[in-house]
Length: 506
Ligand SMILES: Nc1ncnc2c1ncn2[C@@H]1O[C@H](COP(=O)(O)OP(=O)(O)OP(=O)(O)O)[C@@H](O)[C@H]1O
Image (cartoon, rainbow, N blue to C red; front, side, top):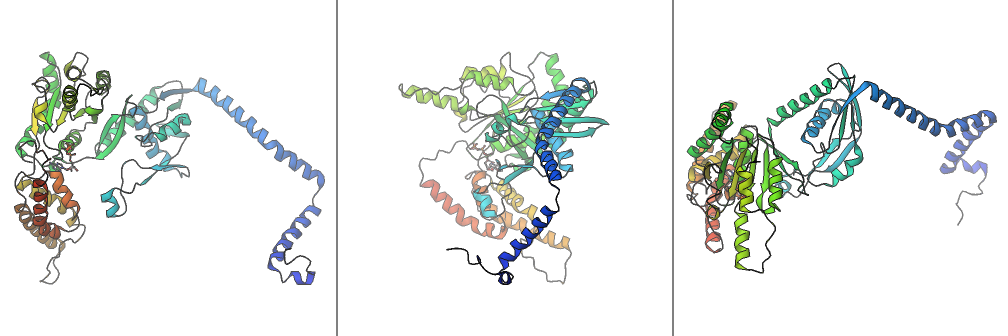
């Protein structure tokens, strides 16, 4: 069917709204075309046609000039992608140059670490991942200490970096830092500054490194806000002893003493206890306390002794190396002995482990923390003094730790939100009064709560699981604990398979 407005007379066309708009446009174009000189139109078309060629020419000329300038007037330093230094420089540029300008180009990707999910249910279930937006840049020019700098980021490796699930989006691409002038000294000073900036940032975070998915190099896996040692509950005396031992070891005087007495400057610790008693948490908290990076090695996933050796060769001199589940080597061996057809999984051996702990090529200055749930399976050679200088038992939770945990869970929220219904019987009490009343009530609730926790029965992580259900209500937590304990105890007694290792108290 033809459109309904075809063939209508001029007088009717004003009644047709669609026709009216088209008419006006065609009238304007007609008017413009009649007034246009055809020769001028030709030169305009020629200009438009030549524009891309001119643009290409300009770009080539600029490249030539730039490479000439670079060759004679710009000094440069290139930092390979994924090098820790690359990350430090990128972070500095993002914070001090790129974000200061009005940015319109971003990279968007799903955040690896579950971030601040918007609702509590999503946070607890970890169902939602935040989107990470990072400023996207290729070349940036800026002034630093009165020198003109240019940083080029090679985006050739960009896609490869982005598909790596362990990559957090910063520092994966090669960077070339250029500075106008014939000396590289300003660049070196700039890099030094970026490193100091990274150190200052690291005061608030612990950087955890792990091997990349090909096992080829150490990569930052996560950046965790420092966990205070008070938040890891275990025997207070042992905690003080452990802290004093590490502090003494890291003292520069100790290093000199070790060297003057020809002793290898190394320190090893063994953290043992049932799963969920804080072995990993304590290691991270120690890294934060002493400002060290944490290099994580999951022993069961190390393929060969050579890999382990390579990992140790590549750790920096001062750091914590966390060897998790060191008993795994022996578990595998036992299984293989019991069943001759059971193929031995390619894994590192005891001698491989001993070799990296104190072999000739083993680097000095680092702290090695080994963790295990099954200390009795460890070979005595592994835990002899020199390899393990201190053993720390992390056990089930005691009543006093449970009380501290209760206070810790709810104290920080008191001044932010009125969790506790405070009776205001004398008119309008000051904020401090309310705070003190809250504190007293909270302490009472905490001791009442702890009375229901049987000594040395639950792991701290079990108790943490309980708190997660009552995060916004200490009263509810205190009143529900008895029922929870009863339920958990009956669940444990009906489950014969659960093996409880160790008898220390948290
Ligand atoms: N002693 C503790 N004090 C405070 N929180 C703890 C403690 N132990 C465990 N938790 C909590 O329980 C969770 C698990 O702890 P963590 O991973 O450190 O235990 P683990 O002993 O290393 O366990 P696994 O042997 O299974 O690796 C963490 O979220 C941590 O906050």
